[in-house]
Each structure stands twice: as structure tokens, then as C-alpha cells.
Amino acid sequence: KKLGKDRYEVFEPTMQEAFQAHIALEADLRRAVVRHEFELRYQPIVRLQTNEITGVEALIRWNHPERGIVPPMDFIPLAEETGMIVPIGEWVLREATSRVAEWNARRSGPPLSVSVNLSAVQLEQAALIQTVESALTDAGLPPAQLVLELTESLLVDHRPATLHRLNGLKALGVRLAIDDFGTGYSSLAYLRRFPVDIIKIDKSFVDDVVDEPTAAALTHGIIQLGRALQLSTVAEGIEHAGQLTSLAGGNCEMGQGYYFAEPLTDTALNGLLFPSD
Ligand code: C2E
Ligand code: MG
Ligand code: MG
Ligand code: MG
Image (tube, rainbow, N blue to C red):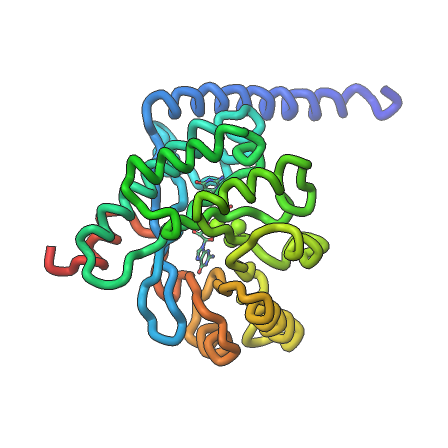
């Protein structure tokens, strides 16, 4: 009050507006779940030595009736907060596994794998194991072709049930990846405890791998760490040929990024996989 009345008049409407926008978004999101307003994009993951596509990462988009395509960062946090990520995440799993199983049935080469991002809230559900198992069965996708991506913070701030749940997922035969590796704190201790198969090197390292010696040393160190632990390494966010040269030269196994392909609609990816269609 000492600051004067004006402060309140400036501050209050902003708070009010933010609150109302939040409520409106939440109502929209509930409707989106019922009306199936979500879509997936598929970004190719490429073997750096040969340029062959080994798999795709499924990335969600919300096709909002008025706002158009909404990126995940604008609604995943709210979906997590409200628990709506559980049905949304189940839809992602079912859609991604069945689409990739269809592509694999038509392909002559080695089968593609599909990577699906999991949120901490999904991992808290005991039913997650059955959800994943039934998505795989219904899609007809072998478990080894599914990669579940987890963030570092999920493993660092883990709950007692996390290890149990991850072991349950591993027992199904799916693979586990650590997403955005290197951006959390204490990235190393949990590598002893959790049954991880793949490290995804965060884009922030890849961004500077050509111009900044420290980023290059860290990136190449992560690749060697992965190798020593017999984990696959995937570099995220490769945009230029110079980054590819540095990463491939350092024996990074795989990569993804706009240099190879942006996240593509299923129709566009279909065209890439089956050009004669
Ligand atoms: P992520 O899993 O680390 O996905 C990589 C993000 O980097 C994607 O952003 C992708 O479009 C973007 N990207 C890929 N290559 C490049 C590049 O060369 N340059 C640049 N600038 N960006 C690149 P997107 O699709 O906006 O997704 C953002 C995040 O949202 C994801 O990060 C993931 O954490 C989350 N997310 C996406 N789909 C899902 C989902 O189905 N469930 C959950 N729980 N989270 C999801
Ligand atoms: Mg990811
Ligand atoms: Mg990532
Ligand atoms: Mg990310």
C-alpha cells in the first residue's frame, strides 16, 4: 500500500488476465482430448556414418480450432499439472506405435524404431506398464522397436516407484533414452541405477560444437561416456554440415535435426519412405 494505489491498478488486471487465460486454455484442452485435436509429427533419426533413417521421434502438436497449430511447450506443462497428460500420452503411444508398425510392414529394410516422450506424471501411474504393453500388442510392434524418452530431471528427482516402473518397462523389452542429456544437474549417478539404453545429447551442446572448444570437449566426452557404458548416442538439433562432421568424426552414432529433416506429418514421412507412392 505504501507503493501507492497506482501499482495495484497496473498489477491486478495482468494477474486477472493471466488467470483467465489459464482457465480458458484448460477448458480448451479438456475439449481437445474429447475431440481428438492432437496430431503427431515424426522427425527422422539418422545413423551418422551411413545417413540411413533408423527411426523417428514422435512429437505432439495441438491443432486448435482457432489458434492453429500449438507447440507442445505451450500445453504439455498444463496437461501435466491437470493430469490430462495421462490420456493424451496414451493416445500418443497408440498412434505412434501403430503408424510405425504400418510403415515397417511395407518396408524392405530393417524396421524403424519409434521414440515417444514420457512425462514424469505418466511414470507415476502404475497402469503405465499395461498401457505400453497393450499399445504394442494392438499395434503389432515388437517392443524392441519402441524407445521411451525420459528427461534427466525425472531421473534426478525420482520417486521410489520410478526405478521399479522403469525396470517394469525394460522387462517388456522396450528401450529407454535420456532426453536433453547434460542439461540437468548430476547427470552421472543415475546412470548406475537406471536401466538406460540411449543418451540424447542436448541441442545446446550441438549448437556450439563447431565454434566453442568447451562445448566440443563436453560433446565428445559425452559420446565417449556413452561408448564406455555401451549406450547409443543420439545428437539432437543438428542444423549444419559442420556439426555433422564434428559429431560423426567423434563417433556419435546417430543424430536428428533440421539438417536432415524437420518433424514431418505422417503423409510427408510416408512420401520420404515410399517415394513411388
Ligand atoms: P524433445 O523431446 O527434446 O524434442 C526435440 C525438440 O527439438 C522438438 O521440439 C523438435 O521439433 C526440435 N528440433 C528438432 N531438431 C531441431 C533443430 O535442428 N533445430 C531446432 N531449433 N529444433 C529442433 P518440439 O516438437 O517443439 O517439442 C518440444 C518438447 O516437447 C520435446 O522436446 C518434448 O520434451 C516435448 N514433447 C513433444 N511431444 C511430446 C509428447 O508426446 N509427450 C510429452 N510428454 N512431451 C512431448
Ligand atoms: Mg524427445
Ligand atoms: Mg531433447
Ligand atoms: Mg527438449
